[in-house]
View 1 (spheres, rainbow, N blue to C red):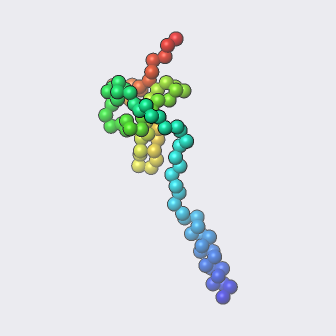
View 2 (tube, rainbow, N blue to C red):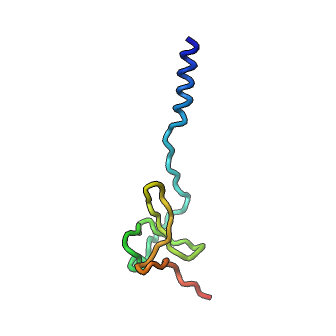
Length: 90
């Protein structure tokens, strides 16, 4: 009888490691202002403009690309392939 409980307990321990992982959300504050219309007008097609946001640390716009494995933050690009950034005054 003790062997039966030991086998059941062992099976539960083995299957406990097979739980699905949850997706972590970022703690970035939501931006109410959205994407400026000028930026949306020059953005290349095929990019997720709904998730686009401005990063003050580098002065550029970034968006979330949902790939087959993971979601990655990539730079927002113009139709000519250049990254869309604000001009820096010297």
